[in-house]
Image (tube, rainbow, N blue to C red; front, side):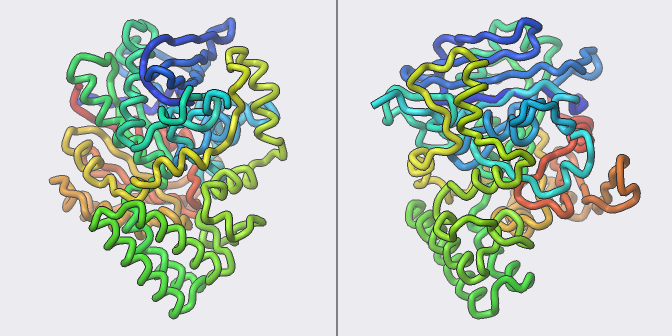
Length: 470
């Protein structure tokens, strides 16, 4: 067993995945590097690596790399995760005080999206409601495929693509393998499904001798692991919070039971359609409750947008401290900086086409994959915001209790510890934490779906991460 501190490199990737050639450039000081990898013939993934100026390498505490995966599945992490959440600069190109780069190297991957070839250090920043979007299958951002048929169609296809990308990035790269630096996969929302499938795919490649890296652990932030448990939680939760009356709560419960039956019968596309109808019903019955913070309304967005992936990125943009036009920003100053983006590729913050390709598996649970990671000794950390609705605490607790992992009973009986912030509001409870063996759970008070994890909590995760050597 070896323990690692939570200092990280962050990589942003965009596109479909396989391995052919890494075409990359970077800044003259080596602090940033970006490029394309052809992960499958005709499928090109864009990635962006930031190396932390605070990097400290020593034998006892290897400096890790964080691979950030957003959700959706269809939203760009390079634009949103990087410039609107945890990267070193905001959309005004001003330094972000709460960037994770202070404690890690960051790798942003638009790993599961592709554009078609033509026809913090402060505790409060991690506790408050944050706007975050999802970015998984090829079809979004600066990644691109040469034919629509090359878009990934399942979590496992996306995982295979990302594993192929990592092979090309790590194998034969002494700098990336330096002192056996561990890779931590951190994901949000639907990205959690990519995280668990990718982690298992990476472990298989490592043990087959085809990938030279050490997997440090997986962090699931408000992750869409068990759709049936989440939809079953919505009615009771919203009734308790006075956003639905008893009649509408029961109607929500009835529709959720239909979704469960459709999932059990393998009718996953039907389950996705019923999920859309349920979200519309709840939006209407609750006078547009926010699915990302049940204490708030859904902002200025029309109810009909709740039926699409647009709500996710629109919400994130609305929570941003800047009023920059993100597509213009990405296709303007950022494109000019990167220099290698093909002329036909235009950055998008989301892709409805990508979501449609994943709709058949959107409601499939990934509890078994979490179980498998735990049984293999991989650290899994779960983060949930107190006022999240779409991936509610109630739903997360329900799927955790379905784990077959042998340590579950002792984990359940382990008392929670309160979390505080040293920087401000000293002594005020900001959350709770518990862990047993390699399972950790963080409850973040006053946070919604988009929980930005502070460097304090990052350090806790890495410091507590213990695993068997791969």
